[in-house]
Length: 257
View 1 (cartoon, rainbow, N blue to C red):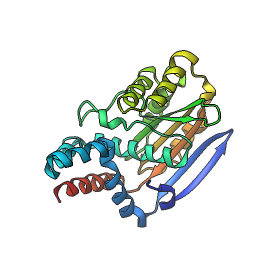
View 2: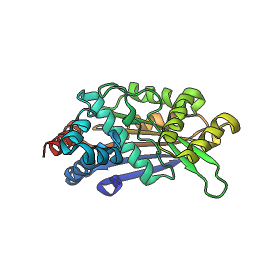
View 3: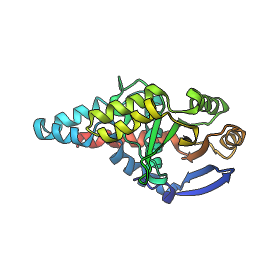
């Protein structure tokens, strides 16, 4: 886990059960977080089990090539990937939800953005096995804008605010591929038989920018008038572009060792 709140200045506001958070990375923690992301990023592209299998059968050179071929070269795709990875880590560390599928492993091409909801989190109530769903949008931009926030709002509100059916189907299929039939069957039953209610769904907007989210993102948070519980997190790294470049360079350097 990245423990980003331990490396940052944090402010949290609760408004009518909705939560707005600003997490600003301390400059002294820049290198530490880069290093941790260098270690974490590869497993979002290829499972550790797959890498271990290639290492055992074909050696380190083949494993390095496999991962290198997965790493995007286009700048905005790299930015989006880092934002999505940090969002996933935040969800699993600071909420009740898990993210059972690392979606980037199934991208059609390393320099193409994936379709569908950015991240879907799942919570299974241990008492009665009922499900809750987190629909998350991850936005990574050097400068935050009303246009970016408006698009995020539209994406969150699509499908009446629920996770898109095809996105849930993707999670179900991948879980079955991985042998996690129990969770796959629970999600499939909720989707196809029981139905999903608004009180089972939460939204998360997670931005990763150099901008101060206390202005535009707070404005967008305050203007939401729907009935689905909202969390809005602005993660600010003032050296946003340098941060992304350093992470990918660190991963590539490791493949050359």
